[in-house]
Image (cartoon, rainbow, N blue to C red):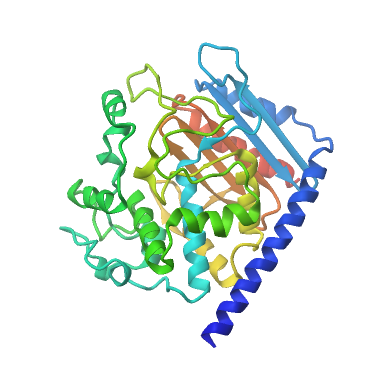
Amino acid sequence: MQVLRKRRRRLFVLTGLATILLAASSGLTAAAGPRPADALRREVEAIHDTGVVGVAAEVTSPGTRAGARAGVAERGTGKPMPHDGRFRIGSATKTFTATVVLQLAGEGQLSLEDTVERWLPGVVRGERVDGRRITVRQLLQHTSGIPDVLPEIAALRDAAGYRAERFRTYTPEELVGLALRGRKDASVDAEWSYSNTNYILAAMIIREVTGRSWDREVEDRIIRPLGLKGTSVPGTSPFVPVPHARAYAAFRTGTGIDVTALDPSMAIGSGSIISTTHDLNRFYAALLGGRLLAPAELDAMRATVSAPELGVGYGLGLGEIPLSCGGSYFGHPGELLGYRSWSGVTPDGSRTAVVYATSDGGPGTQQAMRALVDQELCRTGS
């Protein structure tokens, strides 16, 4: 019965992937059709006006696809933002990682109720956290209480740290150790607390369950089957493939420096993937359209708890955000040193919107990006 169940799950996923490829080819034809883009252009320009160097967005709905760009690809030049440029998607990576874990759960290779200790014996033993009492579900849901490692990464803290350690490579085990030795303010009693360490551990569990790296599983289960040609898992490579815009970070000083080059190993499982607006739209449409996960696993991903830090509901690697026009959408913000993004998709996967910017921007940048996704998903639904 276990073998038959795995075969049925595999058949479900393969059948869904065939549907994706057909939809992708027909979607490219539909993209050539006319769609008024004035509103999208205004929304992109509004984001640029908050102080970012460059910004680009793409939105899709049945039979249509539209994009808009503003600003420049490199500060001090007139180079336009690249068409379908690549960028670090930051925490949107978490949706990819959660999808792989849920596929493994659907295949019976692990359970969401497995403890971290079962797969990673002795790895999570801290002053206030214990892997024997933390489940895989809690990792994906950010309810584990494990501290976040990113505040411990020198390259992300200030310009001097970036220059000194931008090419430093971390192992997942090293990152977990840094997190557990770092801040002591996290509490296992907290109902919800965002921590990138959760998804580093999830990547480690994927490796233990499959015998293959997180990178390989993401590539073989998502990137290659969906034909996401602009998407990659860079490993320890510090470079963003061309075409791309440069990234800038001010480190709260008011003077931005070029931070495009960065060894992303500190964000394995949690924030290291590189992609494009078009590929992210295709990924989220396939996911919410039920073509990557069986119904039970997709339902588990969309079952949310309150996430006060974000002001949304949070499921397993996916947030649920209210729409100003009524209802809600699913998606995930992303940020990794100079690149920030916001992705959204309607509950049925039929309409998507992705936007990214290439610097810190100002106080209104994140709000303007979220407003673009909200307005586009409301508009295409009318």
